[in-house]
Length: 300
Figure: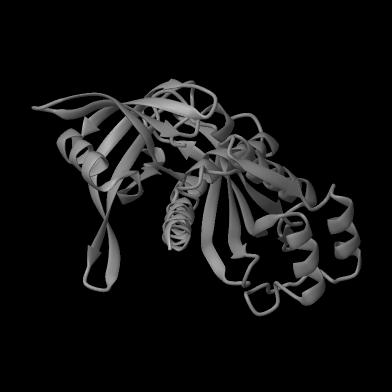
């Protein structure tokens, strides 16, 4: 009888541990992004398209939290590309097929980036203030992100790249190409939010609540000192779950695997929820390009 009772207790304990383990928050991981070959119209020279694509790649790489796969240098993707004709009109209905899906998934990729450079205009205009002439280049880029798991569109944007130079139209073109780096940082900030959780509250007081805390993710995820994060409370309303913004953090010390942050807003709420309901009820999310200027870059 004792043995039977102990068996039941042990089984219950194992079930509890298993359940608790399943609910643990997972550490943030780098996501794999494939940048496909870009298409262009006849109005755009190939070297400009190639330069823009290179800067789109750089925009993802500079964030430090992506594995970026170049479709023009990866052997499996080059073989796939050789079997198909580049689509003039790519959308969710034709971006995926069984063969391409298998290749993408074999690389562990989550997202596919496709781009088309659709237009380019160059003009020479006079500045009324300086009474001098400059070359202006405007290049249009259509960018789409697909979810490889289901072929759905994650984000789509028409981006206007601009460049100015007083010497030549060629230099104005290259300045427009460089503009893609800045535009991509904003694009990634808006569409690829970094999400994590609080590991530990370092210091708190009764009046201000949490003052310093650690979040999971550091150098390996591209976090920079001065990075701003929003704090959300995962709130249950009836049968639905919603995220309610309650606070803000600012990265102070970035380490491997962890970042020490100062709490700039919502210290009382953060401290109360963390201690009473657990860290799973608080989501930390990158706040886009609201971060102070650090090392010449904005955003995350």
